[in-house]
Length: 86
Length: 254
Image 1 (cartoon, chains in turn red, yellow):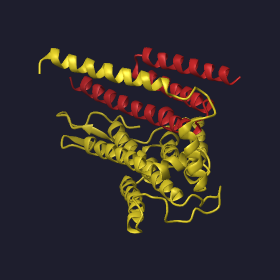
Image 2 (tube, helix red, strand yellow; image 1 turned 120 degrees about the vertical axis):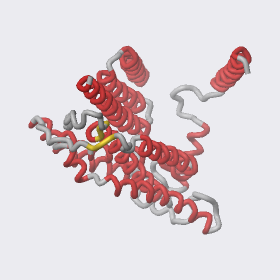
Image 3 (tube, rainbow over the protein chains, first blue to last red; image 1 turned 45 degrees about the horizontal axis):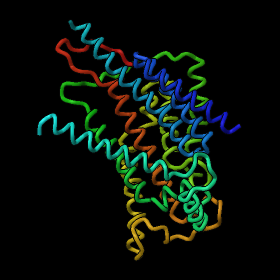
Image 4 (cartoon, rainbow over the protein chains, first blue to last red; image 1 turned 90 degrees about the vertical axis):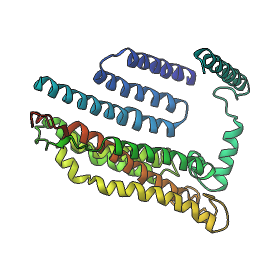
């Protein structure tokens, strides 16, 4: 039972991590990254490391994608302005 | 140094590291076993000091000095962000206009905000008893505040989040950790040694000696640091604009 759970969690992590690498658009990538965070948190919980799972959930699924999205927005705004002034 | 010599040095170092790692792997305890030399010792020490969460005992008692290093990393990272993302001379602030928020989004954000904030504070306060602690709870509490940006708008967020205060809080809590460590030196033991306070009753909020205090200091430090970090990113994404020669063009605030 434990092994099955660990295998499922590992497969989920592998799938979401591959998806995160394969996604090219940064906005979509931020969302996939947060899914990867959830998958990793699940894996850590199954491996009985709830402390690490909580950190992963808070930083990997919430904070990092948020910082990414904010950076993308800043870059977009700059490009928009440049498009307008040219 | 020529390119070839550098490649040689790199491959020598890489091979050495790989060999050491492979040899170390053979000495590891089996995957998923219930016996672990380090784990057993850590649990014994943590129970001796009446700390229910062994991870908290490792972080804030047995390896409190490591945590000081981690806190310093976060502190200097945030300091670097503040310096890099400051408003430069050729930039100006454009007040973002109030935005229309879809009613379901607003309702969801405003219902979730207090729950998430309370969860964060709970996780900080119970770090020495249950999974979690200052770091995890601090990040949760800090991100919870930003639900107000989703539910209302940027100005509402700025109103409940005076960045100056959080910067002061960040510095104060980082110093609190240091002072708690120095207290040990002044009392004649060692830096960050958990010997000053009584260990209390097992599995209560105040058990574990200095662990709850160090945990609270880290909680405050991480929460303030995350708020300051997000505030700088938000400033750049929403408010600060480059002053082009054409003057004000974009009012693309939220």
